[in-house]
Amino acid sequence: MGRSGLAPRLALLVALLTAGCGKEPAPGDSLLDTARAATVFDEGVKKAAQAELVRMAPVRLPDFVALLENPDTRLADVAGMTLMRVDVRSVAPRLREVMKGTNRVAAFWAARALSPLDPIETPMLDLMAFGLESGSLDMQDEALAVLATRVPPGSPPPPRRLLDALGKALRDQATTGTAAVVLSRYGAAAVPTLVAALDDSVASLWAIGALGTIGPLAGDAIPALERALQRDWGDLGLRRAKAAEALRRIRDE
Figure 1 (cartoon, rainbow, N blue to C red):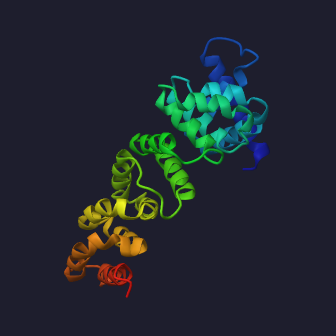
Figure 2 (cartoon, one colour):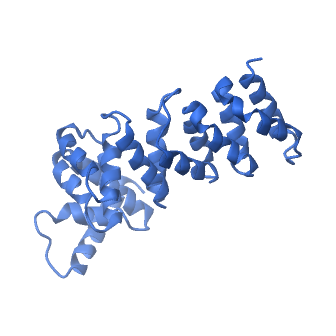
């Protein structure tokens, strides 16, 4: 179904949402109702609502920033995912205030929106750790996206909280690859987290590869990789081959 076919369904859903509130829509209600429509299970309506929100955002940026602090975290998520798709420079000072506030969901989405503009320093890293810990798939995915695109190789050690959160993400099949890439960029600081993952059936393959990427700075991982080289993983030798390659890179052979 094309965009023109979805428009009547979106309009009907917005009308039903408004009717459910028992009142006529006020002049500013279109944003809130469209945001609600973006949380429904109907994928067609959801996508149409998301597209409409992106269209609205450039002329209503302060309203979207305010929506980040809505008590309904589903609406906060919608506002955050919209703000990260548009130019937020005009509301950047307000977003930085939200980042410092006590509403952690709002602070996370403010940081996500600011991530192309602001340095990837401890306050933002702490909020990315919160996103990874949150249990929200959207927040986890966006936290990893920020870290994967903004953390360069050879970065200084991150906050302990972030290392722990990345260690958990490393053991999740949905996030293991990206988590391993991010950890490899922290060099020696990430080695204990990666070594601890070598006993995990999901994380081990990616952890071995990340240790090889770190290279000589991962020297403390040599005993664990030598054990991995002797283990029967039941994967037709894939992890053994990866461990042998990682050892060569760490030993700079």
